[in-house]
Length: 223
Image 1 (cartoon, one colour):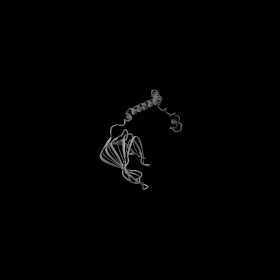
Image 2 (tube, rainbow, N blue to C red; image 1 turned 45 degrees about the vertical axis):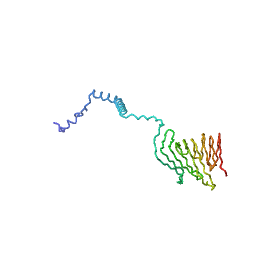
Image 3 (tube, rainbow, N blue to C red; image 1 turned 135 degrees about the vertical axis):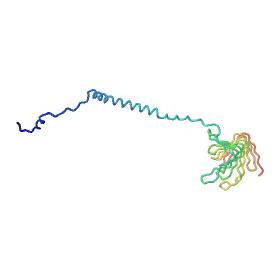
């Protein structure tokens, strides 16, 4: 009888057990899914993009520019407007019964207007008319209907005496830069006690020269 260990018998037995193998159908399905997975992901991304586009609100369509209205956009009644220079000195004051602003031309119409302006020589000029039209920066004034412009007597910046000047007419156009008064219609000029009537007028305040055209009538007071 052998004296060897009975457990030696198990050493001669192959105890290796084969690992279980997945079924062939399952492996085939996994292989097919791995092939088509990129395609499925691309389809999902396309659907997500389409949904986002449908969910995003459409951009607002820019409104076409509206034509500027020819009607007045604001009114002022029984008003007074003052303009000052850089040193705070009053240069122009405008009063009227009613003013209307027209945005298409940036012009203002003033009923029963009174305009007072201090010129470069320091002499005040007052203009009145039934209707006055002015531009946006108040450097031009068109007077219509019983238009009168008066520059009171005084002394200029050099101390020289200046006679009283008065312009009368149905149409007078005032420019403030530089000081000018023009008209293509009959005007009357009063200078001191002298009187002059002409068909047209072009007066420059800086050099105090008046040019007349057409029929001119002059009445000079005795000196």
